[in-house]
Length: 240
Image 1 (spheres, rainbow, N blue to C red):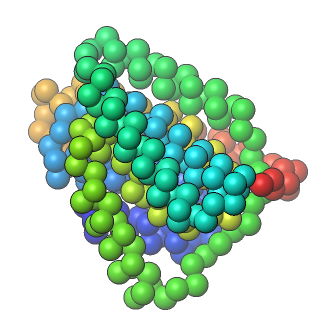
Image 2 (image 1 turned 90 degrees about the vertical axis):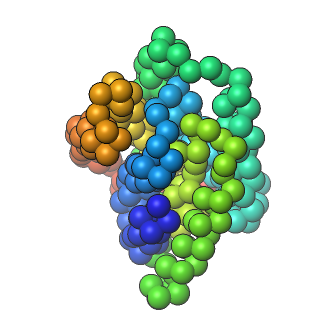
């Protein structure tokens, strides 16, 4: 789990283009590896976690750009917010079929609504200057620590913002672009969770996740192509 997420985080660190960084951050590698290691079924809590991920990203950007909180502290506070809300919702919200389907529809609807309200902005690209042999151990250590700290979250732990925390630091010069990617995450990972929910009683976990990845790709590829094609970066000046 740590190795796979570290590889994803390292690729984010060394990519320069903000939109590409954001897209790599939204790949459901943490969810996949956490599900494989824990064997948890998909529940309504996984869907609710997608909204908490968006709130995490918004809080990081708000703290760092509006209140000038140092980026590391902003990430720590936002992760604490995710843990507190996730722990509460894990206990307060029961899993049920009708609630799962209502939450899935609401998540996709809200994702499209947020995406429509967030125009593209041209932001400064950034590529980590640290050599790989230094960057990878640092990222692996941070990710391993986060893995150890998220045990009380139940279904929320499979979408704990591990890569989003690292991604927020590496994309600290383009946080609007990163935040804008999270509605895409809501729209594209929800079909993955639906596919897993439908298959998990009939297939082994590995095959269930494979079907989920197919559902994710079927949503992610066309949506990302259409979204990038509509981006008028030169006409969208960066804003704090």
